[in-house]
Image (cartoon, rainbow, N blue to C red; front, side, top):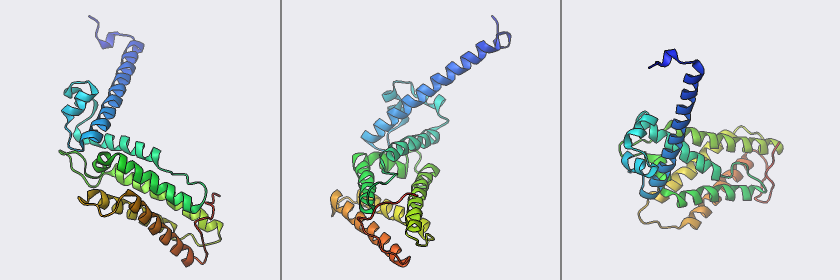
Amino acid sequence: MANQRDQPASAVDGRTVRWADHKAERRVRILDAAVAVVGEEGPDVGVATIARRAGVPRSVVYRVFEDRSDLDEQLRIRILGILLDRLAMDPMGTIGEAVADGVDSYLSWVVEFPQLHLFLGIGSASRRTTGSRTVTGAKTAVAVKVAAVLDMNLRARNADPALAETVAFGLIGLIDHSVNRWLASPERTIDEQQLAEFLNLSIWQVLDGVAKHAGIEIRPSDPVIYS
């Protein structure tokens, strides 16, 4: 029987492409299954459960992913992609509407998918983590986007934009910690609507304070400005 070295390069390349496509298809199927079962059962589901949902043997998971750590990190990337698709990353309308849309889109996703949100924070049972580069990178990307919008709007009003980045990262931290604490509380003293109202009020007070510090006045009814 002819070995691989005796075969035309095109035949070898064709098999390589087909295997890569097959592996990519299985990766998507496994990640889709992981999102589904983690969303239903929480972060502690095992690889065997994910494999059953994907309709593949457990061993196949470890042929597609290097180990559980690799699977978890790829799952974070998938979950964050779903979340970022939901977020209002290009605010339109007034400043007040932009703040409300951002809070509502994030909070509604968290309430709809609490187990996926929890997974982003703690990882799986075998790979607990609180410092994922993927999660940190996503928060940074959102904060940078917010900073850019703040910068543009301060400049458009002839105000110093020096605090834009600091304020943006501070607001992301405020929202993240507030929502995480609310979710973790066994007996919530406020409901989702009250939390949204608190976040809207807090964000507006920060923005209003920054505007006054810069020597300008902004109102919720003012339009968001893009340069």
